[in-house]
Image (cartoon, rainbow, N blue to C red):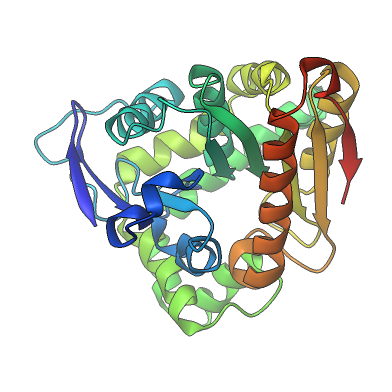
Length: 304
């Protein structure tokens, strides 16, 4: 548990290598959080992976234990990328080719930018529940309505601390029981996150130009990409992640894989931690083996 003094905040982060003498020698995994949530929801997954991987989690500006009082961070994709980039460089993760980057929900957009910025250190990318949709008038209207829903939910978010509204909030995200501890964490993080940051992130996550940029940049990632989706996700339609996979599979020469969890929702890392951890390990091992091969062998796509 440490803090990094940056230009935009005092960034709270956890690095499993701090308590593991061999940790700095292991391949590293950086986890990038979704909207209005701290890094606490990664803990069960980190416990599953830390025997083989150096796991780094952090609280983005406006969430959790990161301190923004006295700072003036810009809540943009670029700003969040700069923030995580400082952490990557502070920990020396940009020095060797052994970095895996995992982005969840909105974090998939930030993770994509990190994958391009640190391509020389990157071994694999994983995008969880951060898809794309065809650019149509219907989609634009849907994004406009979602923007209004974000405004309403932020103005009245404390109501989700009350049962049964808390249960309704969680059930929209998770298709399976995730346990009381993490049910409370998800709601607590959402209601206590910085309002300006949470509004900004919610808006750029659905901004048409930001989504077009995201689509272009996912195609530019040269390391293997795993698209993960819970088919019972009622927060972000799962079809968007499948569309992203199909587009990258069609237009990119680099390896692209898809993991569909038919019975899980928006929080697969909590809903079935062991199965999700096994999927990530398989992807990491695949990417590590691919990295050892010659350039002409470094292609291939599959659906899990």
